[in-house]
Length: 476
Image (tube, rainbow, N blue to C red):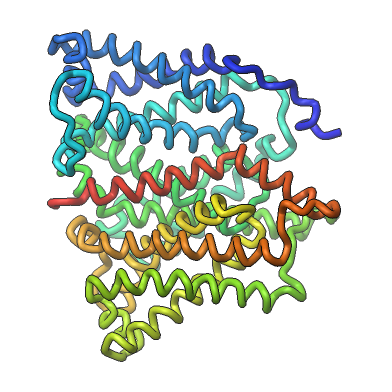
């Protein structure tokens, strides 16, 4: 009998007290940041006052209530306690949309404006909510620990060494590719901290390369907030500045942070696979190989990528970018652009099929992984590889990121279609709901574990990040 089978049942409301306490901890961090930025009087208007200290008291009361809600939701998640961080980040961004942009103006009697200007004015609150969600999740995880841990949760010196080696490899590659100057800033040094902290957050358990890319991209976004938006300005002049102009300037280093996070996650996983292959004889720990189904997997990926590529191609056609796509191979014209674009789309589709094979247990998970993978390719392909191949400066500046908004939408549409079609093709061959043998039963159980784990939080967080990037850079 597994540890999961003997886990005591979850009772409704059990997580509310721990969530409320964790919310108070998150509220302290959020309130301290907002006080230093001078934005807490916005909360005080709910009581008809402009006092920052009254705003702090109201902020704490709201933080406790929202934290209790997080506890009610998170107590049902069968996710390793450290990985609740993703749920906390997604929960924080959600409450920025619902609370700051929606409920606060309604309750204070001011006109509600879901406009770009209103969102940019509330930019400091966005990062305050992210810190609130992260701290709430971490404190809640600590309070919920019952002393039992799975083998993958125990931190070993070798796991920390893997994180350090992954950071050194990825940091070295970034320096070789982009130089060690202003383009990367302190990222090569920060990457060492990212690598060492990675197993502290995610443990050393085995994971597929595809999910590692998605997880690492979100991890890089977190480190961009911590290092790029918080620690760097505090070290420079001792002040915190989360205003939209300051955030727009900092987005210059957002793409390399995202790439660094994804790279560290992938290399960390590969090093673990090498170690298991060399030193572990238990066949249950060996990952699946493509085997005789290799051509079918490639075919599924190519077809899925083709469908997504056609959808993406219409976006390219509207913004008249297909001619630039043709220049990637030294050609010109929309027809050549369509051909090159569809070939690239099929290639990425094949990579998706290889990296996420068996992960799309249903339409929702297929779309979730596909959207996340599409966002990664917007950063890696659209903002980095495409300008590099065209021989122009990397599109890592706020104006070029803002101008590439259509490409972001196209990559998300491509990824969603890619994941949905691939999941449908896989299920036609091997439907997860037909538990006719042990393999099918294991797949159904794995689907449930994925839904109750951190994967949905990764999908939600990726979409929310994609939605907020245009707000950060617009008008820069």
